[in-house]
Length: 508
RNA sequence: GCUCUGGUGGUGUAGUCCGGCCAAUCAUAUCACCCUCUCACGGUGAUGACCAGGGUUCGAAUCCCUGCCGGAGCACCA
Image (cartoon, rainbow, N blue to C red; front, side):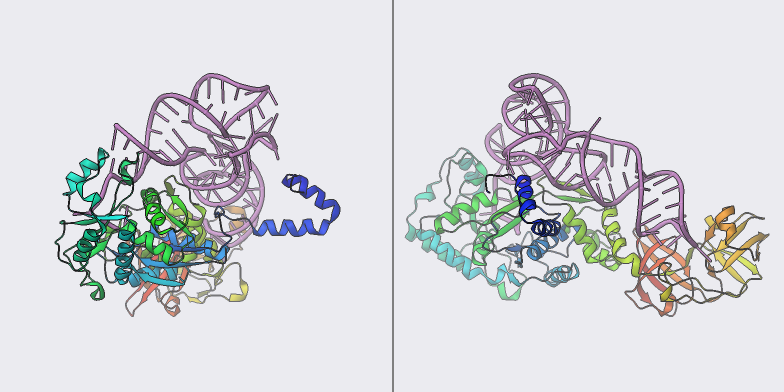
């Protein structure tokens, strides 16, 4: 049977056992995935997100948990979070970011099976460095940075490369004990000094940093591992089977394989993906840029609607699932990808539309007296679900319309859920006509609010705040609830006070 | 300069390994129509792509060559 191709196999099976074909089809349907298959999954799947906790996450960061979380579910595996916080100086960790990141992951709908902090594990790295020295795989080097770079580029070893292990041990111990200052000495991995790719030649594994780590538990260490060493050791020790990382780390696996070879370890499967760009924002998707601008007061904080962070999307009422869906659709290709924010919106709309109650709100309301009419309006809570009941909007002497919806004198308009009106001067006069005028005469149907009793709303959008009035009744919603302002878009109730309701605009 | 690595509609993706079933999949986007007391949701339809040029072949998105364009690394950042 193995000599046959898929379709021939299927045809043959069809003859022998039609039911089995149906089962096969059902299985295939379940097997359809947005993400490509992982290779080598027989021994399980364990992946990791290894963020540097130097700030809360922007939208691009959501891709890692989205994809590895999805893979973990698909292969019945797991994923861990490891904070790669081994640079107390130039990429200094932000103490609040550890929990902020874990919250973001939870909001996206995933739970890591384990959480590590590299800064808790220095002794483990030292231990492995010593083993590596014993294996002849590392040496201490006091070359000035520029000098080594020149030697390296011409494929020449530096004089320190042939030191005996004993000396290297002594010097490394002194590094660990903090007896050197920043820049004085490093521990290098002995790779291949004339490897054709200069990027892989004898890279740095440990260096000295004078600035104490912000975490108290790690503040006494001065000898810090570099990413390629630390991450390589940890991936093996924590049982990671599959690594996904950016194309900027394309050489990491190649560097780390030298270390793995010294230890006799097997390297995990690796997938590289490109960068994600999200449209619709003026700011770069960069933690340090955001930190700077927020610090300078250009934005209100990490959840300002104008800022491309996960916290911002969350506050706007976008479901974590919508972000995950959009990210998973991007796949894992090595080229850079553009993610239109509208894609996240489309997924969100699909998730929330059916269960979100409707309400009226007008921006820049134009006031009209009303004459006649039923005195109160009863539009449905949701047009597709009569069983959810109807709203009750008492109408006093006047209503407000949006400027675009104001009819000309003599024209008619249908106030949604209320009835037909004709404009006479600045008064809307009830005409008591049937809905046929909408169906047959193209009378526009518009939303509105009563002047009396409507609620002052501040709607925060990506383009700034908009003052609105919303129908009475929205006070009864809780903070965190979603609403659809009919003909405007979805909003999330952020804050209810006596004076006003603050909502965040989600999307149309 | 050296070394990696890519290029399918506006966007993302399938197909590329093992050439034909690809006049190229699906989603989103945009437009139109239908439904509708929302411009939401839903339905129907339309728009729109194999980077370029050569070669191999009966046949190329797929293989080969050249070119063009892009991304990344060559840090005591992650």
